[in-house]
Image (cartoon, rainbow, N blue to C red; front, side, top):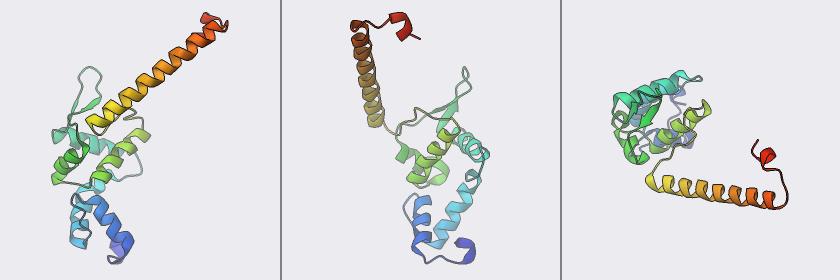
Length: 149
């Protein structure tokens, strides 16, 4: 769109606002935002690697010396998006973690403390349900050795 001069379309404006921290949809903002994030938008893992490296270099994450994994150092994804590269669209920023997940990066990523609490409660409920089903199966005569395999 940009390269063809189609800057007045709804699609262009939606994409420009998606990249921008403040939702601006003008061509100048799009160009500035695209220039700072285009290196992350690749068809392979190189963009995700660059994104993760920049999270570390900007103090939003660190590398765990024991596992060599990347640990996020923020609790609010909206705030982190505002700090990353001087501000990027929060939805774009969140979607980069989804893209990382496609490469096996963040199966347990949460974007806020409230979401972490909800996911923890959900997992606790799933564990309780599994324990109840296990007990029911044992009561019904299932072999404990077989169930543990």
